[in-house]
Length: 153
Length: 134
Image 1 (tube, one colour):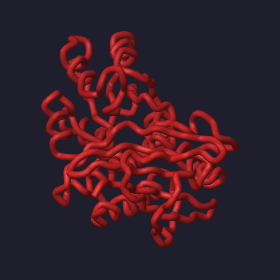
Image 2: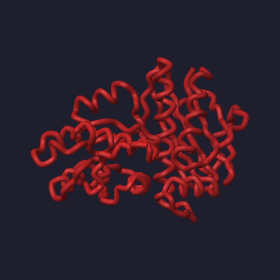
Image 3: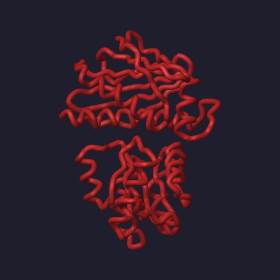
Image 4: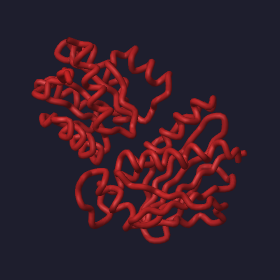
């Protein structure tokens, strides 16, 4: 996978969370993900097509997403509600859109699909291609989340 | 110091069109932060057109994806209907690429807000609309 395609998702994640939720996220060391299981309790995934095809996902721990959505909506959140699922879909949309805009400035014109949100214990994230998946762990004051990017070679 | 007076008419009702109701809350909070308290919402194009016929709306902020209609189709419908053809419309979207901006401007959008959005961005864009239309 072209690593040039990964960094825009990292910077978009930091930008979107800071702007929309006033949450500072700290990226950890990226790793190659071997299994399909999600790292978190609620995930969003979105298909991406263009010079190469793939997908991006976000997977949040419960505590982390409750804090992020509280920051986005300006109200306390205590459980995974429809508002939380909507917000995860919107975050997936915004982060992929922001990364798409950055990739567009580099000459790579991608299109993004509509996001899908998955919840539940031990849910699976199925990326849209069979290429290796790069996972970037993030930490916040409210707990961890993971961004995954997978593009065909 | 001379401060330029805002061109925004905060008495005008703002219609927010988005299929994601969490976005209603986000945009409502942002609008309240800049002083706009007259807000109504629609989760699809048909509902938006219906509100535009029945209420006095001063500004529309619409998302690009509002199935089954697209934001672009809604914009074209707004510009075709006599009751709404002159109402300012700003597109709120993640699609910030040149061709998307051109499509929206060609269809009659006044301007464009690219998500993630802040109160400052929304204020600037609305200000721009009201100044241009004065």
